[in-house]
Amino acid sequence: MKWRVKVPLVMHLAVLALPDSWYFRDLRRAAGSDHRISPLTFSQMRSHLVDGRQEIFSEDCDLGKVDAVLVRTMPPGSLERVVFRMDLLARLEAAGRVVINPPRAIEAAVDKYLALAKLQAVGLLVPETIVCQTADDAMAAFVQLDRDVVVKPLFGGEGRGIARLQSENLAFGAFRLMERMESVIYLQRFVPHEGYDIRVLLIGQRVFTIRRRNPHDWRTNISRGARAEPFEIDDEMLDMARRAAAAIGAPIAGVDLLPGCDGKLYVLEVNAVPGWKALSKALDVDVARVTLDFVRSIVDE
Image: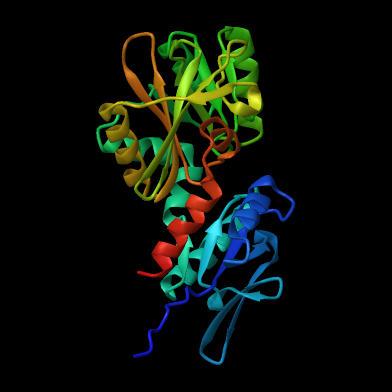
């Protein structure tokens, strides 16, 4: 009798990321010769609707023929371009391609207001937040939130564009400027904390956790100088993180939890394109390999 050895097929994974980014290089390293990894960019995506067929490309890659698309970046752009890019991801998903994270999850996570509303809707505790469009409404919110607020851009991450305002004059000037720029004004009551938050990285059923501590800045982003250290979460934190990721619909998610000085545990946000450089180093785990294995498991379903 001849035994047949099952040889795993090479997965062709399209990664929407900058080709010189650390995350793409890490994925390519982890893939080795096991998988074919193609770096693609949102700006080069295009669609052909011809002869009853839908074809979607990025550069010379036919995305309808890859095994999966992994979204590793969400670059800024005009409203038309952002909507078009999300439309393309949704059409790929509808055509049966594996898209991770799903476009609906990316849309929800990238919009801080929508994401926070979804988190609150499933009963998770979030910082008190007021979102408005005029400077007058923002000043009223500033007073309501006890004149100590964190202002964030509706879209953005890694601590960019975030400011803490405690001065009425500075707040008034900032809100007037944002109104002139036709920005949405997103204010959160500042939550006093002990200088750290908890990042929970969920990849399918795998869970990785670090504490991000910053003794020099109230912001706990690694890009702002915070240090990552291993942290073992309890059942409450794990439950909150899983519920938050599920509310957004993201199988791969970075959930940020903030233990406040008031003894309460807040969910700050869910990142649908979470980084893992600091986490991988702090925990000595090959997150890129775990990510590829997870994508492979979805493709094989």
